[in-house]
View 1 (tube, helix red, strand yellow):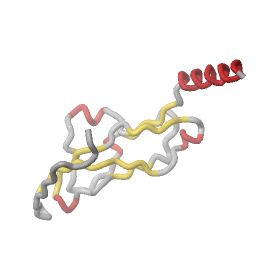
View 2 (view 1 turned 180 degrees about the vertical axis):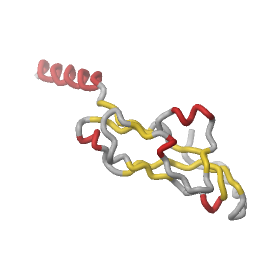
View 3 (view 1 turned 60 degrees about the horizontal axis):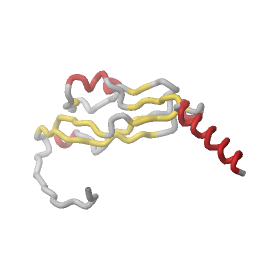
View 4 (view 1 turned 120 degrees about the vertical axis):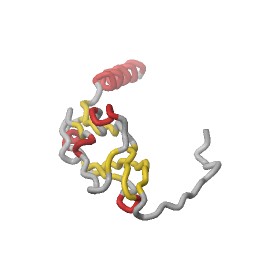
Amino acid sequence: MSQTPKHVSFHVVERDETSISKIPLILKGEAEGEKKGGVVVLMVKQIVLRGPAQDIPDHLELDVTSLKVNDKILPSEIQLPESVTFHEPEGFFDQPLVICQPKQKEEEEVSEVCNEEVKTEA
């Protein structure tokens, strides 16, 4: 699959017309959990919003600075403009958008094994 667009369509939308748009989520900041060895994972890269075209943002920034290990950000924690709503399936609201999880032990074990093999070969 290529990253080069094959076709582009442009549609004129009136400013006050209700629109449904897919917008990206962007992480902002460094989580407290990252400083203690955790990993921040963006579980949902984009969301669908519905509202007047003029009120739908181009993107949403999620501030992760206060996330500790095992913390998450749910859709209900996102502040949308008053006239804008989520346009997602029902189960969407139960799923985290972002989580700060502990670093996987498997990665650490594999790293240790690789280091031991390098020492043994030397």
